[in-house]
Image (cartoon, rainbow, N blue to C red; front, side):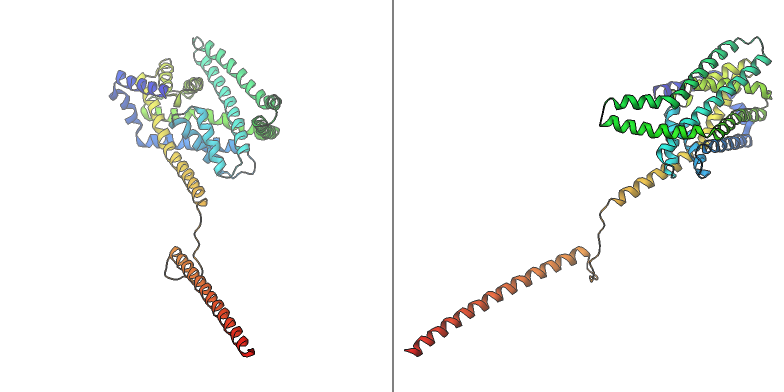
Length: 377
């Protein structure tokens, strides 16, 4: 939360440093038409990335992973969470749509991994364009080193998915029964689901290829926005800027929404390619507005679904009141109470009558015995 506050303060400081009017000028030039085109392109890319996720869940209806992708990205960009929080929300969304929890978790892990490899390939492509456009760029060497380290970490993440759960299961079984057994059982189920996904190699490769295509196509958003703003940078130049920008965002994954990081990276990278700081900052703010426009309705819809599910769960646990048969007009409670009172009164009256009859019988028997004795005398 503190990082988000610092990031927002940095954005405000940058806007006032370069001048609100100077920053607003490119945004006004883009206009509603350009903004609508940027949002449309982004929605299409989100749908494509949802389809890529769906390739890992065969048999799932097409709209389910697309919906999950919308919730995932909306949570990552708008809520005060890191990107990991968005992954959890996306998996939760597809679970509510009928996907079992283990499949949702395993497919999310694999999808995020393949998207990461797609981003690494995208960054490598951007680095290649950078070396081609500006062979003497000082940033090329650090980017190459960072790319190599990221590739090693991504490969290690895959190894953990394939082998790490076996080691975890053996470690948990050392503790014997209780929570360790349950944890080991859950880990074993997740490991089985991950292995089943990775066995479908054609689907895994298709998911990776589609993610890579989406990464490259995301450059079109910035290209369209700058065209409307009157800054016609080449596609290769923008590919360099966008790929390095998202690399910087990934390194700042712990900062919610990469607030402040995105703006600073745009200004620094744009300056190397003739993009003014005001235009670079305006482009970043345009993307923030795009995320709000698309993400807020998605989060509201998700929250309504969650609230409806919670309400149905609460109402299902409430006791049901049944109306007694034969009661009309009077409320069930009062009718039941009246019947109980009448029953008690009737029983007491019957008991009194029985006692009186028994007393009379004893008296008649006594009189009869006295008469018999007198007659004998």
